[in-house]
Image 1 (cartoon, rainbow, N blue to C red):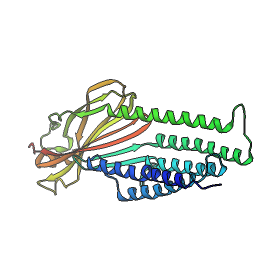
Image 2 (image 1 turned 135 degrees about the horizontal axis):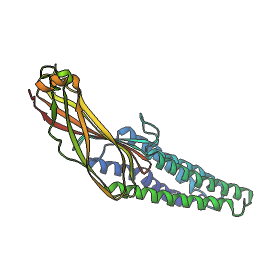
Image 3 (image 1 turned 180 degrees about the vertical axis):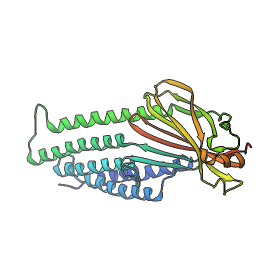
Image 4 (image 1 turned 90 degrees about the horizontal axis):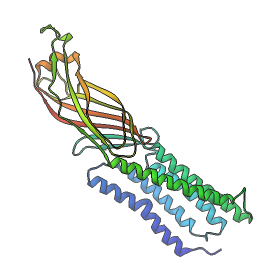
Amino acid sequence: MAIQVTKMILYGILSAVLYIALPLILFEVIDMLNLMTFTQEFKTSIIIIGIIGTVFAILRHAYPKDTSANRIIAFGSTVYSGIYLFYLFGGFSQGVQLGTYSINITEPIPLQVLLGLQTIAWLLLASSGIRAMQYLIEAIELRKNKEYRAKVKLSKLFKVLGTIMSLVIFGYFGSIVYSGMNLGFSFHPMSTPVYDNGGSPLDFSDDTLSFNVTFDLDNQGFYAIYNAYVGAEITVQTSTNTSALPIGLQVGGGGKTFETFHSFTNNSNNTITILMDNTYMYELATTDATLSLKFLFNTIYATILLNLNLTVQDIPWTHFI
């Protein structure tokens, strides 16, 4: 059995580009555009995994396709590529739940995103598993010179199932990308705070201070958004009296769960109410500060868990008594 040296070199170069060069270039472009930053550990792991995948690709093309050796290596290579894709889609992100991708952006505004890509990761792994079974059965058939049949050739059945699975994943992923690009989320300026002294100007224990935040959500994608929680947290960023209002102290918050934002709709003027913590009412009433407002958005979109924290800084706060 002759070794196909030329094919080994060709597919080795191609695999190195796909497994290593292309992801690293993509990471750098995304980083340059300030969309997100990838840790050096993640990049290193991609290089290591990519090298192993390249070795599999070289070995896979060492033998002709109609040999059991080729099919056995193709089985291992396909299983490994499934694990690679599973990892690439956040399957093994360190410190977070299996299948959850963590994104932290600092510029132009602080943004933290958790994407639960479990569905995509498992679909890709399942698709690789189906294609791997095709190669394993083909290897057995070639080795024993025998076809395994039910009503159809078993290896052909897995090949068809693998093709269908790939098309489903491609369509699903494409629909998510399209839908995500057609989501719009914007906040209106905060309303004027409403202060109520509870009828006792000298007693702050029964006072309330609140204001409303209004937002628009334009969902022109294919998927509806269900059980979306939209909330806010207010913390102290700077203070003229750090004894009264320490830096980082959370002094208010609130939120609301919205049942459904239907697809192809523009949902305007949705309101959440933020209450300032009564514990710090006197300090808020008598101290100038700069507050940081963090918006929270949690939902399930097209089976993807979306947890978004957006921080808006430099909100001036002036004492009102």
